[in-house]
Length: 286
Figure 1 (cartoon, rainbow, N blue to C red):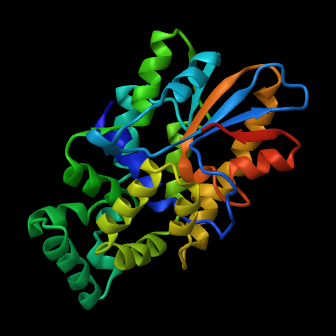
Figure 2: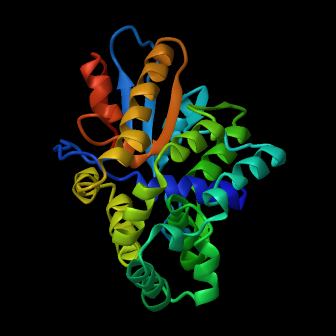
């Protein structure tokens, strides 16, 4: 697993965490999809793209669900050629050689710098280095450094699937993910950076606690943020709408273990409710 993938995936998790309020009637990270003409069920599994090594878990029921399917579907196929990684890494850099300071007032930039140095404990030189990177990716970089030894469900699941000789597919390509991020205006990214830097670690820890407890209701509550409509549409809603069509097309023919960020499961526009609305039986596996 390369650092580039970790940064991209984690950044999408950190920023992709807003849906309108909706009561989730059961709490589980694993959901069985059956009904209609399905002869063998598929499963939805909510991941967190990066977590401390000592918090990682994968239960016997999760393993049994994975083993019972023929295909592992991740958000993206994580086996990306090096040349493609290098190309996409270049797209993480701020446009036209600019830095965050070019998009902020002096006071706002000083406040962000203070959050990095005083709240997060980074040296000024490192903060200045980060300021050359599009803000949407910085959350993942910070968390990687602060957490230390990490586990990633995508890597672990891919390893298990390979041992069982399963096909591994992506619901979208890495370049498609990069295009989604690239379509979010720098000004919107800067606004989110100013609001969230100081509380980033606290927010992640709350998210992690809810995830480890497999508490979708708490995840839903934590996602109920203001001022995120544009990013929400790009990072969650629009992707869910595309993915559910792909999932429906395969349900009758290919038993699949779909592993996507847990925030894609919750809410009225989440995968669980969209599949229920389409007439499928979607049940929590506890």
